[in-house]
Amino acid sequence: MAAGPSGGGRPRGNGPQGLPGISVTGRRAATFCLLLVGALCVQATRVQVFEARDLDRNSANQRLVVERYARPRGDILVGGRAVTGSLPTGGRYAYKRTYTDGPTYAAVTGFASQAYGNSQLEGTEDDLLTGTDGRLGGWSLRDAVSRRQNPGGDVYTTIDRAAQQAAMNGLGDQKGAVAAIEPATGRILALASTPSYDPGGFAGSGNADQTAWNRLQADTDQPMLNRALRQTYPPGSTFKVVTAAAALAAGTVTDPDAPTAAPFPYVLPGTTTPLVNDNAACDRPGLSLDTAMTLSCNSVLGWLGERTGLSKLVATAEGFGFNDPRLDMPVRPARSNVDTSMDPSQLALSSIGQYDTAATPLVMAMVAAGVANDGTVMRPQLVDRLTRSDGGTVELMKPAVYRQATSPAVAGQLQQLMTDVVEKGTGGNARIPGAVVGGKTGTAEHGADNSGTPYAWFIAWAKPAGSDAVPPVAVAVVVADSDATDVTGGALAAPIARAVMRAVLGR
Image (tube, one colour):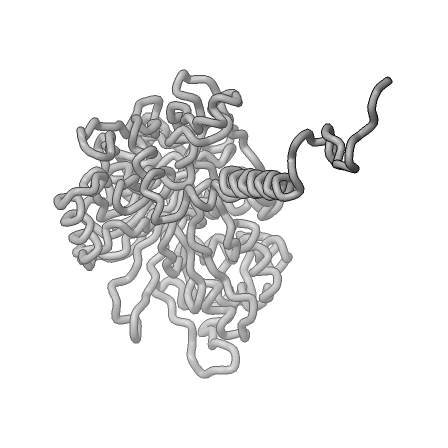
């Protein structure tokens, strides 16, 4: 006969929670440990997943910098050939950036420096060039855990080597900039800024790199300023193309060859100040728009702008790219400006590219390109395609319409006006044998009481004679400082534009 439990003692076996031999204190300790493990997992997940990007980009995190330069950087290419490279250093940062003919392409590539960061395409395409862009490789658990980087990809630019070299040669030792565009696509063919600099001079992190950087920062000529994209200038009479477009679209002028009601002298509204012409041939009333453009008459275009009205002039300018703070291509240029609130006299001055009107060479090239492309302005593009290190395509850029600045009919009238400027007027230095060239000169005064050296401008487009196709090139040139005695758009800027256009046309 089996005996029952003795003496009222506690039976052995499972406790109340079914855990053999574990006391209440032990269970509490186990639960606490599980909670700690859970908290650690949550914290690790938060740090490694949700905060990884912020921690990676923290300036105090040197691991990222070491990893960034632990392998060769992808290349930036012009005309299918690399203008960048990577050099083994044998130091903490295994590779540093190198540049082929760095000053020629600095306005395009920008710089990638171990000590000073990056700019331009080196900055906007940094993830691809360093291999951290998620599009460069397939995802795997091993890669996610090890955070292994793919080889850097390559950036193929839209730059035309011959056009870029012509722009740099034309600018020479002068301060200035060139932007050239293919009107039908928006592809940027040249982007030059002078004086330039060698981005390879401070690509490392040593004493020599610091010395080179400090010297560039202290240079009063500002060689690191990208004048084609990041500097705005009063466009002077080149803006008259925009004013003419607004006047024609609004019906202020219906026939460019017919006399207008423009008075002479034209006194700025609300003042006793006449708007002065630089050409005595302009000093007569009733000039046609064609004559006024050919001779670059301030009085006529100022009057036309005022008669057309603020809203229509601003709308036309914005169609060409003015007042857009996000004109990324993919680098972001400075915002070109036309004031949206002006009195009539200010409007008249703005209509001839003065007052507060200011533009980058890129936007003035868009003006010329939009006219050449029958009024359609294409979004400017500096990158043709992005690839993996093995050449596989990551992204192929496609032409995209930016805005319809004016109608094809008005654009056709503007094309004739610009052709007459080159054939019969102030733009004669841009003529190219065997080609049709349309252009507009500009000489913009600036400084206190207009005491500064004028800015010499020229915008233009060109195509082979007899061609019905959209011109293959449009260009804007500004010479911001020169030792020349004849500081005018026709004398200084037009020959540079001609050289760039000839390079694209192959003439």
